[in-house]
Length: 342
Image (tube, rainbow, N blue to C red; front, side, top):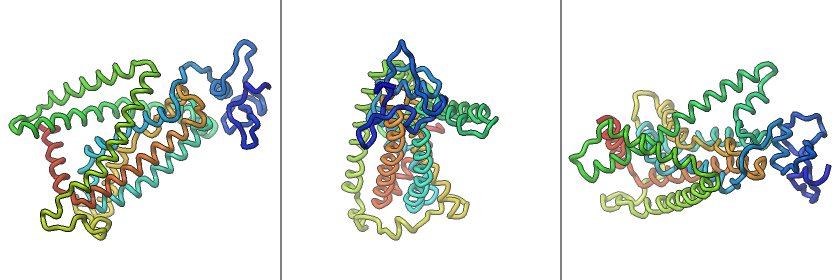
C-alpha cells in the first residue's frame, strides 16, 4: 500500500501502516483498509480497521482534549465541595494518606484505560472495548452493562456538579447577607439554569468547544497554582501563638475520629473526596473520534489528566493539612448544610 496508509513513524523513520500498529483490527492480519474512491487519513484508517466509518470532525488536539478532561476534574471547586469528607472523616492523615493511596488505584485504572484507548480509539470507547475484551459469548452483555452504567454516570455527574455549584453560589450569598437562607426551590432553579447554560455551550461547534476548554483549563491551572501558593502564605497560625505550619507528625500521623467506625474504615471513607474529584479522566476516550492522531493523543490525555490532576490535588491536600485549616473545614460543612438543607 502507498504511504497514505501510514499514521505512525517508526524510530528508523519508516512509515508504519495500520497493519503494523498496535491497534485492534477486524481485518485479516496484514490487510489494511482500502477504498479506491476515498483517500484515507491516518485516523480514518484506524477506524476503518475497527469496522467504523469516521463521522466526526477531528478538531481536538492533545492539549484541547486534555483541557476537556481536566475541566471535568475541576480540582478547586471539587476540593471545596468534598473538603469535609477528606478532613472531616479522618483528619489530616485521612486527607494525605487517603488521597495518596486512592491515587495509586486511580492511576492504575487510568493507565489501563489509556492502553485500551490506544488500541481502540472510538467514541463508543468503553463499551466497545468491553465487548472486544470480554470472553467469547459475553461481549454483548459486557457492552450493555458498561454502556448503561457509563450513561448513568454521565447523566448524574453533570447535574451533581451543577447542584454543588448552585449550593456554593447561594452559600456565598448567605455569607454576604447572613439574614438570607437559601430555599430548596432556589437551589433547584439555579441548578436548572446552570444546566441550560451548559446545554447551550455543548451545542457549540467543535472548534469553539475546544477553544473554550483550552481557555478555561488554562485559567483553572493558573488559579490552582495561585491558591496553592496563597494558602500557606496567608496562614494566620502565628497570630494564634502556633507554629507557622502544622508539624509533619500531626499531618501524617493523627487520624481524627470523625465517625463511629474504626480508624482504618474512616480513612477508607475519606476516599470519597479523591474518587469524586478524579472522575472524568476517561473523557479523552469518548472524544477520540474528534481528536487528531487519536490512538496516540487520546491515551496520553487520559494519563496526563489522571497524573497531573492527582498530583495537583495531593499538593492542595498537603497545603491545607499543613496550614491547619480545621476551622475552614467546619465552616465549609456549615455552609454546605445551610445551602443543601434549608
